[in-house]
Amino acid sequence: MGVSYVPVARVGELAPGGMKEVDLGGRQVLLAFVEGKYFAFSRQCPHEEADLKSAGQLLNGTKLRCNNHSYCFDLETGECTLPQGGPPLTVLPAEEKGEEVCIRLEW
Ligand code: FES
Image 1 (cartoon, helix red, strand yellow):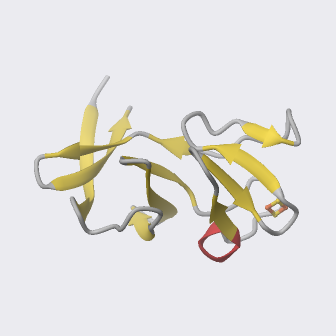
Image 2 (tube, rainbow, N blue to C red):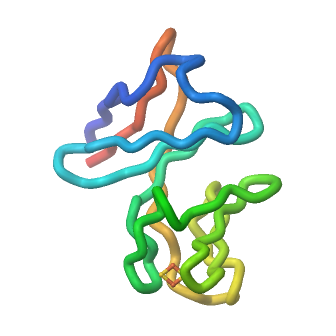
């Protein structure tokens, strides 16, 4: 198995509660900075494909709500918490590496 780290932002670039669009090899991803941690996830809502760049709203803790139909997701796991058992959000591991924020890809 291989692992690679793709730099997607500089540490300090995102304000708390900020989000940034990332093109990850043609896949549209959002990077969020919440409670001192970075989270990367699909830009497309798994419910009816709303663009989470505009429809997504960060809530307290590590929750994201899609304002299209108010589905909520846990950014740590991608689990749909409202309604429970709904389609999960695709999440990717993101972490600081030196001065950069990277998304970890495994294959
Ligand atoms: S499209 Fe996101 S909740 Fe329906």
